[in-house]
Every structure is written in C-alpha cells, then in structure tokens.
Image (cartoon, rainbow, N blue to C red):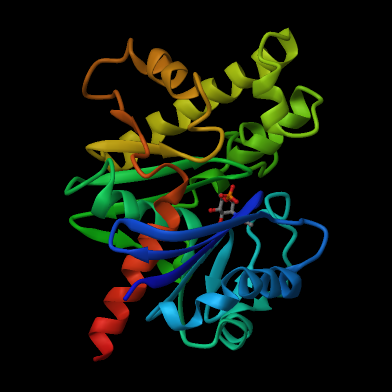
Length: 282
Ligand code: BMX
C-alpha cells in the first residue's frame, strides 16, 4: 500500500501517493502565501481527501522548522509562518485522518535522493535553491537532523563575516533573484534571461551558491552535492555552478549533480521515513 506524502514549499504544495520510488498519483497547487497555516493544512487535506482508503501511513514535509509538533519559520520571507509556531502535528493529523511523520523539506528531499536518486549510498548534501535555500545532510547512511531538527539550514548561514546577520539565502534565493531583477517571480527572471538585469541576477545567485557549495565542501566533504529546487534545476543554472567551480583543484572542488528525482525528492523521502516509522511500530 502506498504512503500519502505531502510537500509544502514556499511556492507550491505537492500531494502524492508514493510506493518506494514510484509516484502512483499526484496533485499540485500553488501555496497561497496570503492565507496562513490553517488554510494550508485545509488545502492539503482537500488535495488528498478522496485518497483515504488508498494509503497506509502519512508523511508531511514542509519549508521551515518543525520541533515538538510546532511549525516555525526560520525565514518568514520564504513562508510567513507565525513566529510563536503553529501546531502542525495536531492540526495536520486531525485534517489528514491519522498520525503523520513530519520533517523539514530539504531534509526529506536529501533522504529521497540518498535512497533512490543522485546520492545513492554516498555521503551527500542535498541543496535546494528555491523560494529559500535549504539543505539536508546524509552522512554514514544517516539523515542528520540535529538539535531541534535544525541541521542543514545552509541558507540560514550568515553571509557576511561581520556587520548584520543577513542570512545567505536573502542574497541568492529565488525571492532574491526576483527582487534583484525587478520581476514578479523567479520564473519571470529565467523567462527573460536575455535581459541584462535578469542575466545578472541569475549569474550573481549562481556565484554565491557556488561559494556556499565550497563552504559545505570544507565543512562536510560530501562525495556529492545534489542540487534541487526550482532555481537549482532551472535550465542553465547547474551548468553555471559547475563552470564556476571547475578551476578549483579536486580536493576543494565540490562534485555537483542534479537531483535525479527532480521536484519529487521531498515526497519520496518523506514517504520512506513514514514507511520506516510504520514498520518500526508494527
Ligand atoms: C528556508 C527555510 C528552510 C527551508 C528552505 C527552503 C523557512 C520557512 N524555510 O531556509 O526551512 O528548507 O527555506 O524552502 O524558514 P523552500 O520553500 O524554498 O523549498
């Protein structure tokens, strides 16, 4: 029996029935940033309402931090969540009709790429360049969750050596690209890449993300950094990253590969975590 897996990001929400690495059914809607967590949870339940008898187990993966059942923003620009936290575990379980395994979106996607995608069997970092910038780490076959589930928040690393605490993602993410090029969203910037302002925003983001990859390489020395997210997988972005990193000597140079599961890495990863939890309980 498949698992119901839902991935709620800053731009879209994907609900899927997942069996191993296979997506048996899928539905996707835009995440309406103006409504709030109660409406997002209702939206998820609505996407999945007629699948109730078709799954065994529920996995939910979201942008932001979920600790002790409470969902909080690290960067409200990525998704405007209440700073005091929203009781996601309680509300989602009530709306979806059963216990749910809940993790950060980039951590779940890392696990999906480790099990079934571009990072199979290797120490890896999954880096999503998306509305925000997130990451998940798998070392020695273990997903690193860390204290309060915070591990992997590479986009939250502080970008400047001194001065303010501006996080890295505020200078390179999809939202930054759109703002920098003065377009409605990052998709419009990629569509207008012939325009110099658009080309410059994309290039500067790639330069900065390449630096982030270099830092991650020094810190964790993964075998591979798997790149995902709507920006990371947009045409031309990953090849720019590789070109920027190419002159480095092999010891310092991160090995970059695209997410083999594309935008499905999160639902596949969270489905695996939910299935493992169900097995452990039986
Ligand atoms: C932010 C943060 C991370 C998330 C990352 C990518 C929030 C709301 N989110 O760094 O938890 O993993 O963005 O999120 O603080 P996405 O929505 O761009 O996929």
